[in-house]
Image 1 (cartoon, protein in one colour):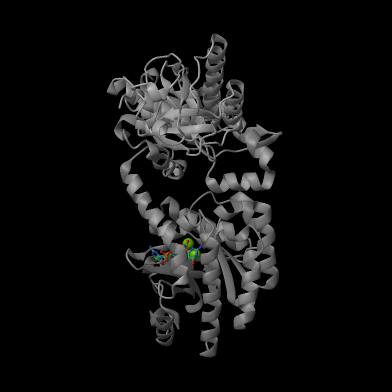
Image 2: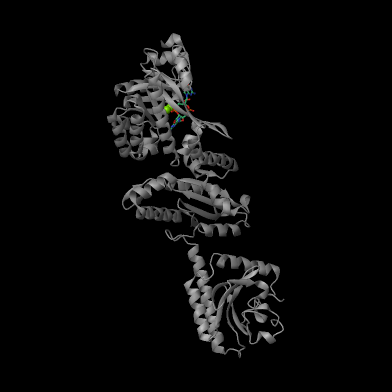
Length: 596
Ligand code: C2E
Ligand code: MG
Ligand code: MG
């Protein structure tokens, strides 16, 4: 059977256009195309009219009247004939035409006896298929007016296909080409080996979500539009900007045009200034990933996923941008696996457990409290440190589930110990997300009641990063805990940007000096002075000062001498299981010469 006379290369190029312009369009789904076939069939008084697209193996009717099936095999297709030519194909009686007389559509249903089809020619000159009319009776050739109408109707079909395609490739919020467009474009760009993709995410997922929730959708739109304008100003001519998804933007450009690192630095620099939306300054927290496309040829679908997996790491780096690096990505694959398994681990009974590290009063050498620290035995990955999985969980809602698990377990443990005659105070670590609303408070109150534990036996520890996000909300929540009698401890103090103003405004009861300060301690060095200074400042605020990471005799004696009230660290005890803790206490608290 004859098909079209296109060369394999031409046919391949034609099929690329077919895929690009029609693959997403479901048959019969577009009212404009449906209207065109209805109009054409009524003009010619024929029962059948079709928008037929010639794919690899089928002709697919994207719009049709008077035809039951959505497609037929390509071999049966009339429309495929002479598709290399631009002319109207008219067959007045297929039953007597040797090319079609034994075609199953002629010998059987729908018994085609007349066919006229005009090509659907796109800008490149290639034909996607035909707009055709079909009758059960043989007909005389159509007149010139008929041909003109059919040709014009085909032009409308093509314009419609192109416009559907365009709208499918545009991000409605910013009017920029979207992710699908980017993916289609880099397929072509991969052949050019000088292309670079730059993914720019102005805020972390959590911050963006918070922004949209607290200030509303319209504000969020304005923010994204402001970012778009900023980027368009900075990008060189020839660079193409796309919306990469909810979180950000991606640029495609030639490496030859300029120094990529200068460009990216200038973007980072521009984001240092606040962006004004409705007169509200928004500070961005940009993270950028740069990917040289030739290394990724063929992996187009993955490019944005790969890039977005490292923007968070980039955000935390000094320059705020990173070249895509497969090593980082394999680390991220582990992170994703770890993150995915947290919920199941919470539901399982044998994966998470708590260990308790004693906190010692340096005056009396007695254990005055314990800190609950989470441990995870993963079924395949083995022991995973909280230093690894907690920061991951903090990027999602999982951290809340972890905290509520810890809250209940700690209360249960305190009540167990109480039953054994031990009244213990326990501190537990909470994260920023736990303090953004009243959930944690309700959970804690419930657990305290359920296990009959006094609130004063609980202390919440959190790091200062909690205070940076929404200070007022956090302060209100902390005050509720304080009013209940729960202790409030600031963890890892002195490790980041310790802020004294905050310290005075929040209802804290204790401050824990970060263990890195002790780790770097040398007689007379700056840590030496910092620790001394911090101890006296914290004491001036009438807060209890606790040193973390006490490992040596020297630490112990210096801290005591400097007036630090409490200490925690391997010098006294490592984190212990509940049973080991009891043993340790019975033996007088580990180093008995110090403690009891
Ligand atoms: P953190 O709250 O600052 O906990 C103290 C960390 O220091 C613990 O690490 C502890 O094992 C370790 N440590 C204690 N004494 C010494 C010492 O003398 N020298 C040294 N080098 N290290 C010492 P761990 O258990 O690996 O926990 C790491 C971090 O994970 C914790 O830091 C805390 O931020 C977080 N974390 C642990 N459990 C939880 C939890 O239940 N919830 C939340 N949100 N975070 C948790
Ligand atoms: Mg802690
Ligand atoms: Mg700490």
